[in-house]
Image 1 (cartoon, chains in turn orange, cyan):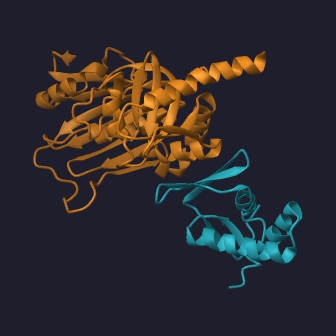
Image 2 (cartoon, rainbow over the protein chains, first blue to last red):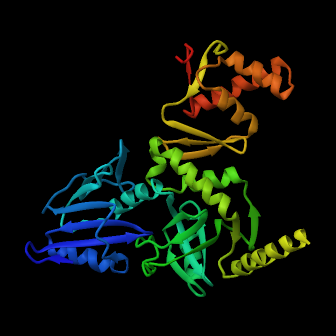
Image 3 (spheres, rainbow over the protein chains, first blue to last red):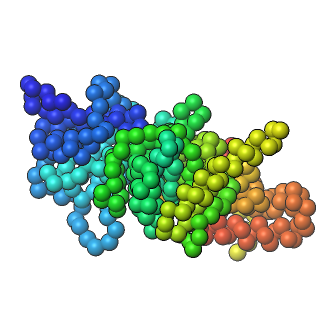
Length: 288
Length: 97
């Protein structure tokens, strides 16, 4: 939406039910945000957070140097401070207001990831570094460290299911059940869709490349620890860890979490399908 | 190092939570998350700044029915590992109530 009196762009992103209003006077940046996040734009007028984006030519906050990409995000007393090479901003979560100063060529995505990571953990949800897939109306999440095979799994899964993300997903606890939500953020799979979809979560798999497909149980505490470790930004903030552990514990108690050993073909679906076919049979045999 | 009279407590950058008898440890500085086994979790639980190392050994010896000497050696070795990993720190004084 554009305010015709001021020519200000007002765009509300709705990700997993959390709304963030982005306001900018810069038409190019506004159009770029609209184009990149179009499937997640909303008309919601009561956002959780309102962010003013100020475009500043030729600004540089961190001098580039060889090494990992630098993103500094710190949460303290309900306040996020964020800085990367071309962007710097804050959010005061208590007042629901924030700003982002950025160079014209900068991207707002890493800043948004930090904002949504906080919104999730404060609202019974978790932003997970994981691939998400919806198959036959049910959600499946595949997580693991970098190089474990999230993008590979996503590419294989895309042949027979909807990939909602190859990099980040939201799992939200609703009435005791875990729901998988797609997000507009993606990783290495440049052609990955940014699907604004959700589905009841069927299972979570810690993935491990192997010479065969098989499932291996994980203890509850290990599953919780693994999910906590896969939560970007908030895992580093001790004031949020109790909430984060609570959410991950709720997720683990609502759906099975297992290690999926897999090789590079779609045979893993057969193993997964057989597992879930067997579960109701076993339950039925027990009750009989 | 004689640590028996010292009071171990969680490192300021570490959070721990016991789930089903096992502790999940979150090391904020390094973003590492580890899980301790049941005995390790019990020792971590007791390392709250209110128990000296020798008191922790005594409790572990009683709860797990092992000799006091064995408990002393195991508890010390384990606590020093946790110090190395910045999971706990050793304080000379008991935590104030």
